[in-house]
Length: 355
Ligand code: MRU
Picture 1 (cartoon, rainbow, N blue to C red):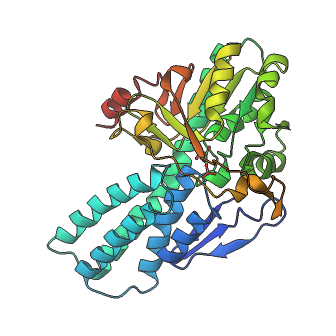
Picture 2: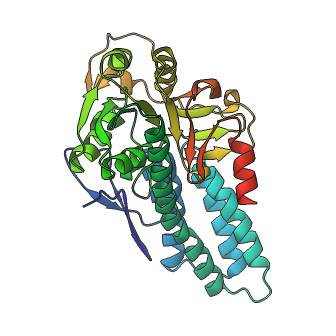
């Protein structure tokens, strides 16, 4: 059975508390916007697409559970909630983008002459529910495009992939982005092995990706982040595939801290480097990666392990959660639901294909 980060049916939302994985699988009820914001902020749910989906579904749940008011009051509540949800985490663009799109929808809906409180609720909830299905559909397309592209360049029958952080079912509505490509290669019988990084300091690789790969029985090996160069030299890596939290107009990409050094090492070893993400992770309002806000996280993520201090007391800590990979290092392309594109062409392709 595939792992589910998010369990939703109309009026009820549960998220798998990822802070407790891999030891315990506990689903927690999200009763509304405040609880959704909190779950995202505390990283009970994380990963760019999952953040947006849980944020928006928390609004759908609160609307469905009897939020009172006329359509104007409901619209104000929805707009304020969306603005609030965007403040939960700063680097991934998906929540901000979803908020922008839903805010436009809300404004349009409430202007309809025949709009009522009931029709407003129904239409907004249905619109949000559509995001869940679309994300899974897009991830499957990403998986197919990516697998096909990697295999077309491969020198061996079966490929070996290196990935970073967690981009699987736990980070999305299901199937995954970079992990979706890995899943597709596996289902085609063309994957020999995956190397997944530990992903220090938060260990999304060791805790979550390793968990997903073991769950799916995909042959996989965990390595520390400091082992990636030697793995590239000695382990026959065919391609590196990572996710993205924000892809800007020139193709620069924000992703989990450590992605940048992976891209540098891949270039040095002549290994194709791919970014896999849905178009909802694109933000063409920013021109270059330098404009992306990078989340900084608590020092304890570096100084402590399971609440036990391991770093020397008194040391200063810098803990950025993401870094920017310049487009020039994304050598093999960016995989979206629309295909595999050169980072600098992506903007034009997406605008042409979606207009
Ligand atoms: O801090 P996180 O765990 O939310 O960061 C997640 C990542 O950086 C992922 O690699 C990225 O969001 C892609 S998720 C499909």
